Image (cartoon, rainbow, N blue to C red; front, side, top):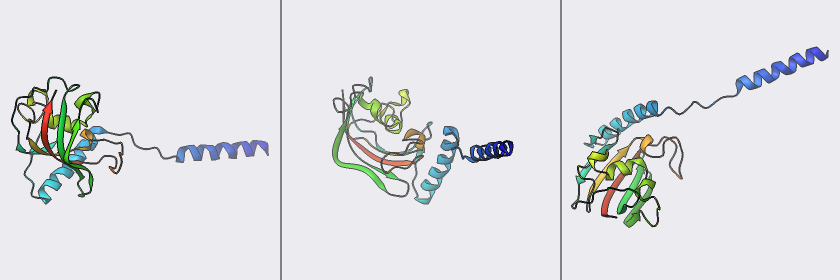
Length: 176
C-alpha cells in the first residue's frame, strides 16, 4: 500500500510540474518583425507618409531645426522639448506642452537616460540618428517606434509591454 501511495504521489508531482505553463522567452527579432507589420498598417490606415530609419523607427521630419550642436557627449547634453507620447490606439500616456528639460542636473547621465527611440531622433546621422547634423533648436519630428526602442517587454506606467509608441517632439533647445 505504501508503495502504491508513493507511486501515486510521484505521478501527481510529475503532472503538476509538467502542467506548469512557462512564459515564452522574449524574442526581440520576432517582436520587431511583428511591430513592423503593425506600424505599416497604422501608417496606411491613417494616411501618414513616413520614412523608415534603418533601426525600424518610422519618422516624419517637419523641420531639422537650426544650429550646429554636435551631440558629442550624450552624458552632458541637455534638451528642452515639448512633446506628446501616444499608443497606436490614440491613448496619450505622456505630454508636455510648455517645455521640459531632460539632461543634467535632473538626469545625471544626460540623454543616455532617454529611451533609444529618442536618442535616434536626436542624434546626428553619422552616429545612427535620423537628421544629418542631429535635431537642432526648433526641430520638429514625429517618430513611430517599434517596442524594442521604447520599453520593450517591460510595462511602464500605463504603457503595456511590447507597445509601439508614437511621439511628436519639438526641440526647443539643445545645449551642453
